[in-house]
Image (cartoon, rainbow, N blue to C red; front, top):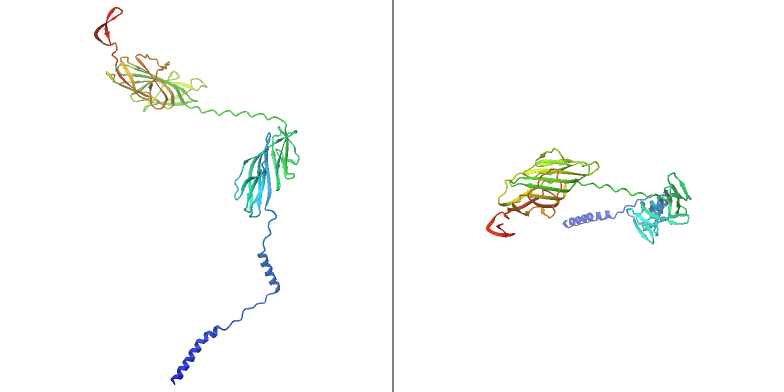
Length: 414
């Protein structure tokens, strides 16, 4: 009994295992549809057109427009040329623009995206391999060829679908051959004949030379061409300073002086006439004008004073002169110091000189004492000088001995 049950269970398991395999072996019949023959032929033709290779363009490029704006010169034609062309494939193409003979000269070349310019075999070429439309402008000049009748020049216009030349000229100077030209009032419009423009003209009058443009007036710089200073000192140490400045300028200007410490302005002269003045924080501003109408010169003179404690047996003298807001080209100074001292230059921008440039000052003063000439060139800032001094004892004392002078006994003096 048990063996029968086991056999039945085994048969049941085998049936369960075989059921999926039998189900997987069952095949579903494919879907089917009926299509008319005309539709099949249409689909076939469309597929053929899709994979068909396009025909190459009939030409690698086309030149749609060439327009020349020309201006006639005495012996040449100056041309401003506008080009419009199209590149039709992606292979390198070259378009001849201009024949560069000995009579032609390119003046300007443009920058063209995806385009290049090349000179080859005496021709100016435009190169590109990018399909598309190109517009650009270039300028050139063509010198004319002289003939018995006058002048002539040829400008090539090959491959242009539309080629025109607009010529401007002076009708009072030139007579133009108007073959293939249309008069447009102030200019002529030429049309290309056999891929070229043939220009012929003769000169009927001589162009009057253009007078040279007047040189622009140089802006005159305000400057002190020369300055003279006279300093007179006393044994008490007081100084009287005269500063005369020769001015050069245009129009009406103002000159500024900076007065040194411990100096007071006493008088101001403009072109020899005393004028009122005002010193504010050591600054003295003087409006100046020319001495005569139409002139550009004037002179300013300052008179200053300075008090000092006086002299000792030896020491140094330090002196400054007023500075000017205008550059001083050359400054001459004459110091007149007490003659009881010997003086030696020590320092300063004013240097000793052998030249004593005396002038007539508007403010008259006597000039006693020892004269010490100084000078400075290209003065900027306050001119200054420092002198060392000692008592001059020459011929001021004797040692008790006597000497024979002309048969006469005299004291020996030192």
